[in-house]
Amino acid sequence: MVFARSALRLARPASSLFTQRAAPAFAQRGASASFAGARALSATASQQGKVLLVLYDGHQHAQDEPRLLGTTENELGIRKWIEDQGHTLVTTSDKDGENSKFDQELVDAEVIITTPFHPGYLTKERLAKAKKLKIAVTAGIGSDHVDLDAANTTNGGITVAEVTGSNVVSVAEHVIMTMLVLVRNFVPAHEMIAAGEWDVAGVAKNEYDLENKVVGTVAVGRIGERVLRRLKAFDCKELLYFDYQALTPEKEKEIGCRRVENLEDMLAQCDVVTINCPLHEKTRGMFNKELLGKMKKGSWLINTARGAIVVKEDVAEALKSGQLRGYGGDVWFPQPAPKDHPLRYASYSTWGGGNAMVPHMSGTSIDAQERYAAGTKAILEEYFSGRENYKPEDLIVHKGDYATKAYGQREGKKHANA
Image (cartoon, rainbow, N blue to C red; front, side, top):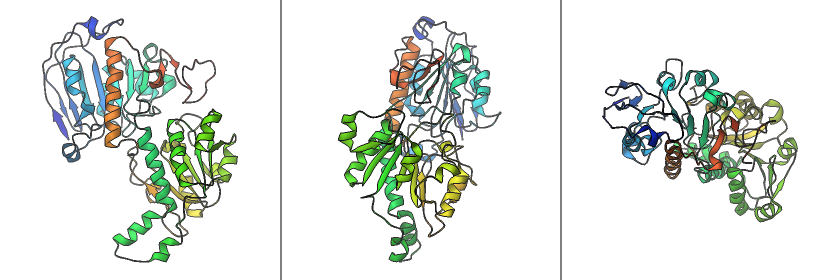
């Protein structure tokens, strides 16, 4: 896919663009450049900032639905706004490999925006090349694609921010849907009908009710809490949660849930487990063969958090052995998932089915895209104005330090937000 267009824009005075901050001198650039899978605008100006936007290609779908904002074609709806301020906007989907457009363009980018659904991985090595980078924005929730420790030392400490809350409802709804799809054995039943077959017993033998089941969430943040609240209507036997921070007694009573202080103890009690924690060094690979072995045999596991929280080969083996009855979600590592990713094809070998995996879509509904596009623009407004009056809950790292405990409790760090 090739996009190209040129524009000449007069830049605003540097003082209005980079208040309280030295305005970097960006070299003048001529007309726009063309390249596969990318769209670039070069504005002629004496002072301007370069914004690098990494999104997935929408192709015809982006034309069919203009509100598909998280695509290279629709660019979060911010191109004109960026242009009108005299900045350069480069948009690409080409993000993998040393010769990717992402690698080529990040060297002089001041702002990088990417998304959890098609993440541009900002590794330590890439950050070292980004000599002018000041802020990295996640259009959505989850900034684990950024090496946060390295971000705290890059160029004196860059800001990493995300649009907190923008898609929590979308993900919570997806979690509930996935639970029902697995517990009610929906996928094999639908595939049977699509194949022109009819065998009620063949699918009913592995179909259950969510009612009277024990359901637990690993983490009870904005998404985990919403999942528990939605489960209340299903009359589950018990709702459990594991988190370093407890809900208030009032919330626990309102939701009807109970905290379990030991993760293994919770897993052993649950018929259904949903993972809703961030990815960091303490949760990477957490659901491995050993921990999966602690789960109740024949239970279901849902993961809409991050693919790297589970060991994919171990999950596939747990399905094969019957330790897990089903696994579902929408997160993979890496993304996009390669064709030979084991969780594309893994199934509950005893009776088939047990796979409710989809592309990373839970948090990118049309409604969610409108919210995270607006939130991204709001973060950029604070940056370009020089105010930097960000919402505290949006900050992950700022001014060389962690601004949240969400990515692990770290000694010697200040934590503005729990």
